[in-house]
Image 1: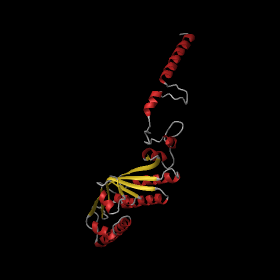
Image 2 (image 1 turned 60 degrees about the vertical axis):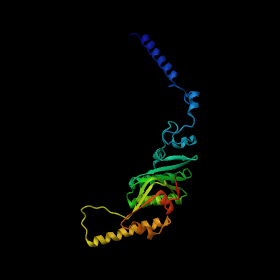
Image 3 (image 1 turned 90 degrees about the horizontal axis):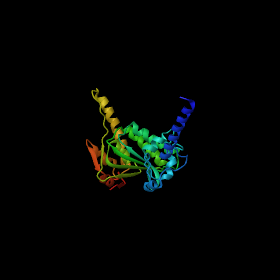
Image 4 (image 1 turned 90 degrees about the vertical axis):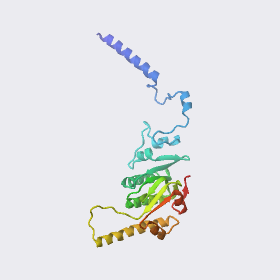
Length: 262
């Protein structure tokens, strides 16, 4: 096959590709809007599929230019924006869904705190949406400490429960600045517990453990009394060899919640 014939065939192929790209909008000039006018009219107020934000003025706080990828930072900015950033009345806020009280929850709260402190003025509200059977008391205290740091910096920390918050999660819920519950949500508080199988113990060790557990329980009940309408003595008596169960309506009545969702 001669050189001229090869060149002619290649020219035809290139011409066909150019026509196809132009027809499908695949070869549009940079910056040219190729969305048909009639399609634009049907779009209305768009919602970002990643952050779920509808306020388009926030687009490039979350996404990079060019490429529209999620922004990243050393403190996990992209993760926060993707999972937890929401908008209420045109203002950005963090909406964190909390499950079991474990190291993962603490890591998340520290990440949220770091992000907020590194971006002053951007976020003024953290909502902790709680559905949890509890977990570690010590991690709960650490989370409560992070919440206190946020509140001291002028950040509103709202705790919210529509379903269930027990044990360590009860403690976290009650420690919120604005505590919101469904009236049918269930809350449970109990004595400090330990589980150990095949652990040999003697009377001295049992006395030491009882002293430590009493210290832990006193600290928690003192705190809960300070954020509610009930006394520590009331809490001590209510959970003695028993569990204390409240609905959301009860939590409001006894001062563990500030308002009801419904």
